[in-house]
Amino acid sequence: MIDIKLIADNIYQIDDYLYSIPKWGSVYLVNEEKKALIDTGPTTSVTAVLGGIEKAGVKPEDIDYLIVTHVHLDHAGGAGTLIQEMPKAQMMVHHRGARYLVNPERLVSSVAAAQGETMTAKLGEVVPVPMERVKPVNDGDVIELGNNQVLTFIDAPGHAPHELCIYESRNNGLFSGDAVGISVVDNEVLLPVTVPPSFDLKAYFETLNKLMALKIKTIYYAHFGASDNAQEDLRLTKSKLEAWEDLMDKTVTKEGLDGAAKKFGDRLCAELEPIRNEVLLYRYLVEGLVPLNITGYLQYYQKRHDVN
Image (cartoon, rainbow, N blue to C red; front, side, top):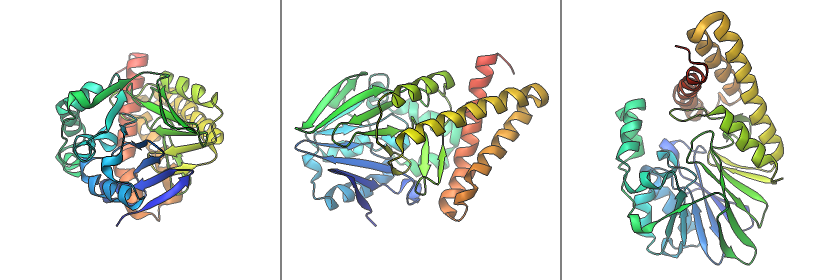
């Protein structure tokens, strides 16, 4: 099944059926004089992505830029396979992540160690991107797709040090990757993403403040879809991180790290209750994202406070 949606002028959302779950992973096609694909999904999503591009009336060989918000494999794992279908596309990636696309072995090993072989199977084979196709980008770099569409790259660490957000000028929108968190089931649930190994709360707050100052109208989430309540979403993400920080500080003092981990997990599961009827997605988030969020937050907390 190919599921695409025109969500703004000249911008299509493509459901990449991430891990075979509908409405969990989005990639975006910006269809201007020059054409850009934002994120790739993993290799197991390549068929859905290519089908979405073609359903939008665009040929893969017409894509000028293949852009990844960061190099986590649910966002960039399919880059090496997709770029083979896009002979003129330039691969755009944060300068801190470029080497992982050229040599993804370390990323794959990290996923296998943290999440097991079952997850690597869900991601599929990760094919290297030829070095000559890769263009590292920095904060403030721009590419012009047409008279009314300029993409501006924004350094956005917190979730990951190699995270980019991409501002698009035509609709005053932002491709957020995971920098703002996940927003699923029509914005029913909005959660920051604090997964290991590189979650950094201080950097996350700085990124959110930077994005708030842009006064954007729309956020295009990688998980999942668009929200026209950009400023409200940014404030909500920030307030949830503040509440989680307060919860951790108070609970660790009284109950130690194990007690804090349990309370944090209970809090996250309670946040997901509104989408319990979305069985596949709810199960994945409870069994997959929640444990990763706990692990990432605890690792950060232990480093920050030097506790064991």
